[in-house]
Image (cartoon, rainbow, N blue to C red; front, top):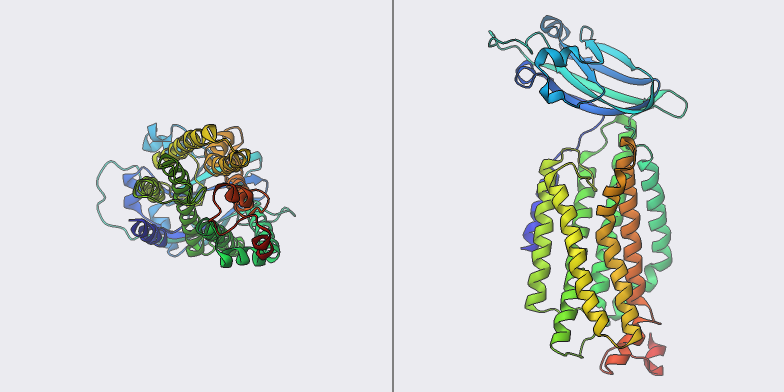
Length: 430
């Protein structure tokens, strides 16, 4: 079931193309008439010298249709307006009468979202269209001013700075890998009580790093042409989702396995991944639920990025699921800690709880905090905050499971049959 979920997620992400700020398509009279205007795209402009440029394939046909682009600063109450009221309410109306045209966006004191809608002479007609008109091919390019004030920046205001953030994050991953790759590889090669946990953590961290790299590649090309490489962006989102699923399965399996093993009074494998049919079933159930919500969210939210906000029903359900899982894990860990007499073991479980809670709660908490920020800051707060918090969570878990001074002592207190003990001979080996 797990492999089926992952495969389905891959297929969904492969065929869901991301939106760019250079938009190409067809102006369709039928679509505009059915929807009281054909919605094209949105862009968050800031400052002055913002620019929107268009290019048409068939200018005479556009002139015959009396084609126009309508620009709106806000969409509140838009659905309640009649067709004629919508057309007349546009802040800017651009007649499509030339092959190319550059439209300067009025200066604004703060970043503002502009919505672009197509309309023509047939949009508000009550009668049926007498003849089927051909569609008009187009290309729109939206540009914000760069640091010098020139309109060359393809990034919308809510995306500004993410490119530099991903570059710095790649640099941090590279430096950390140069420092810690060899000790980590040695720990994985030697095995030990937490070998499976370290493998899952390493895989999740690798997928997160790969997601950051793919996002950077996509945004580097996006900065040049406003389109980027949508496949790279989709693969980045897919890698992040697989990492989320893996971490969820590991954390649930560990907590449930520890609880069930304590109930059986087992001292053979303390603090290890003690799988059982019940713990596996609970972990798989959580994984399937989260995987289904992630896939649903891809269909609901057309603006594809790794950390969605709260704009869709599956997004809200994912928030509820993460909070619910946090409460379940808190209850399980509280039962374990309250019954544990060893101080070292209690410290182990408390550190583990910190890593779990930070992983699950960072996204819901940041979504709530983003309400306090302006529109152009929300996505950056969620994206940067979640990536940093989850990276810190992985570091906490790594230090916990690799620590000689904490975990190895805890292991040695419970059983002399463990591969790792505190005897001098084995301490020298490790």
